[in-house]
Length: 136
Image (cartoon, rainbow, N blue to C red; front, side):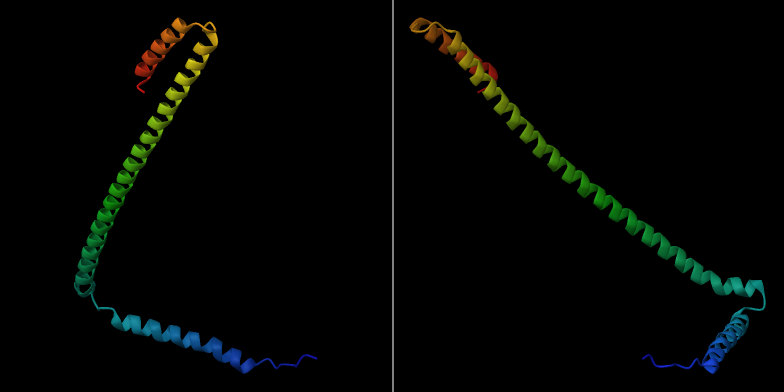
């Protein structure tokens, strides 16, 4: 069985009353802090505003420096990736050229007359030319 609990009306009443007094005190404190004239208020606030403007300027400069640094790092990384991709691409094209030369040699051998030594020598010479042309 669940315990029966009492609702505390006094407690709720106290909670409601406290913020009202706190707000009244806060309002009284703020009105007491306000300067009697606008000129006095601006004189009081101006140094704080100037200090805040300087802090904002410093923070902006720091942010710009950080952004420039990050942009430089990203650019360097992109350059590294580009160079790596270029090396891979050259490797792939090199491999493709070698494969193409190999297939051409196989086609030549298939087309040459069987038992013809003279044809084989010509095929070898042609193959050497292809190798030179392919850069191998």
